[in-house]
Length: 483
Ligand SMILES: Cc1cc2nc3c(=O)[nH]c(=O)nc-3n(C[C@H](O)[C@H](O)[C@H](O)COP(=O)(O)OP(=O)(O)OC[C@H]3O[C@@H](n4cnc5c(N)ncnc54)[C@H](O)[C@@H]3O)c2cc1C
Image 1 (cartoon, rainbow, N blue to C red):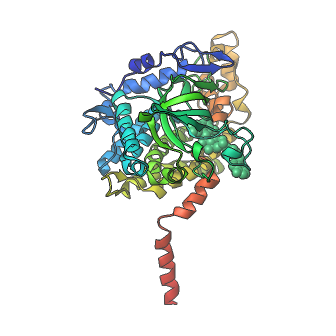
Image 2: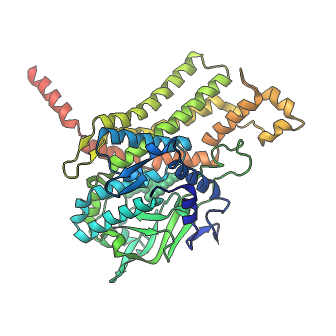
Image 3: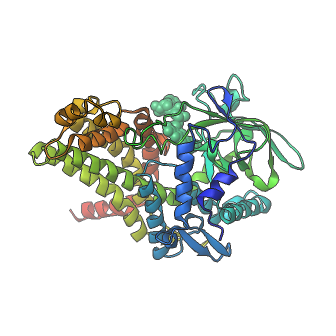
């Protein structure tokens, strides 16, 4: 069985990787205080692959790999496959309330999409295409956890990469030899990088211009590669009693910058290099968007549903769930959850087979609608939670333990809800604060607004590519022709 369990995942992270936190090198990422909660949560996801209640959805016998693999490593070929992919995404998302945006299935889906489009990489060379397909097989067989780093450092936006004051900062090829490429520079933001097995690198957004060839590379390396440094942001993980920080105590995914100090990338891990034309086409032509957005929208459905349920419970706690203005707001929230939920089902229903590889692709525009609306709906739901909570979101005991202290009876009296004990309402409010007021919560709002890239670029792309534009235009022309 290739699909790993949690222990195998944790054991695999005990290596010589160079991870830096607050100016100090981390010895063991699996036991480091700031990463441990997240590592444990990820391990529990891998354990689910072996749980009889979940394994039939989360894993699949792969004819190509010849073993049982994590389902997201298998390209969908039937509507049933697509449904099971969604169910697997949802199962893992439910285990984290949708709070782990970069659970392993996200990059698994991306790599599966790329391997299914071998022909794209073969346009560069047969060797690079073989390298990619073999690498995907290696990932699936070993069930490795991957992160990715696409974005350059925020330098001078008016200049191209090679025109920056220090052209060595954006990641580029500085040399090549019989072993591979030598790369130097910086990429960000690699979520979960400190405790990932592998790092996938390709540049985004795909707007390369002549002169930027050394920067146009696609490759993957292990996180313990010599010369690779992972530099972390401040942790938003809260320690202590879980009831005080129900989400940030277990789901904070570390974000990191990765620095390449003359790193050797072996040829069998180079999938494209120094080709601005292919790079500019890669995001669209490999059809990775269809596969990854199926995962991200399924996860978002779970996350929005979670926020919605918190809002409903807060309204009940305040005894205002039947007030017309609140009912209207909760109705709108339900619609938002439902719209995102519909995008995956609609995409599956309208899926089409790509004759080139026989893969069944969920409908892109149905999924893009979800990616476009997520950055609007998520902050709207947070606003609703803030509206319902008011000052009650901050007027909370330091810890839930205070209910057991000499002032417990007072707390119980003034913190109680309409039909809810003070203890239960405080638990709910602490959860709401973790969602909308903590550093963890702020990072999640930023994540939902940014993870799919800049929203304006997404909307421009949707306008450019809208697949049903012609259909509606023809209808209009017909109508006008009749009058
Ligand atoms: C929490 C979090 C997790 C993430 N995880 C990952 C990950 O795992 N892997 C990964 O690769 N990426 C990840 N990202 C990165 C994400 O894809 C980018 O943040 C996003 O694409 C925006 O890019 P940026 O941060 O460089 O912002 P910028 O592009 O610098 O945008 C900042 C502002 O500058 C404006 N701007 C941008 N370009 C121009 C221009 N040319 N002229 C004028 N204005 C401009 C934008 O409109 C925006 O208002 C993550 C981001 C966040 C916030």
